[in-house]
Structures are given as structure tokens and as C-alpha cells.
Length: 55
Image (tube, rainbow, N blue to C red; front, side):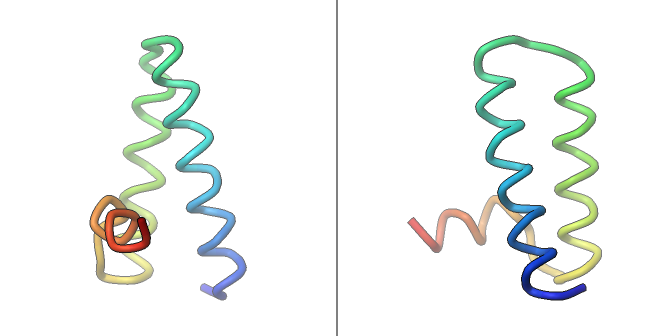
């Protein structure tokens, strides 16, 4: 996976996280889990920890 694809994945994660904070939708929770799983599968690191290091 290219760096640009990883960036898009992170942006999708952040957008979905914001949407989830506004409404508790089961589909959004599932989407977050899928994004986290894909990121972990591609990089070997967890998305949450990588985002904490950036901020």
C-alpha cells in the first residue's frame, strides 16, 4: 500500500470518528473497525497509537 493510500485511510478514519461522535450508528462502528484492521494489516501498527504519536 502506498503512502498516499495510507493517508486516505487515516482521513477516512478521522471523518468516521467525527460522524460517530455525532450519532451512535452501528454501521459507523463497523466501518471504524474495518479501517483499523486494514491499517494494522498493511503497517503492522495500530492506528490509534500512530495518531497519538502525531499529535
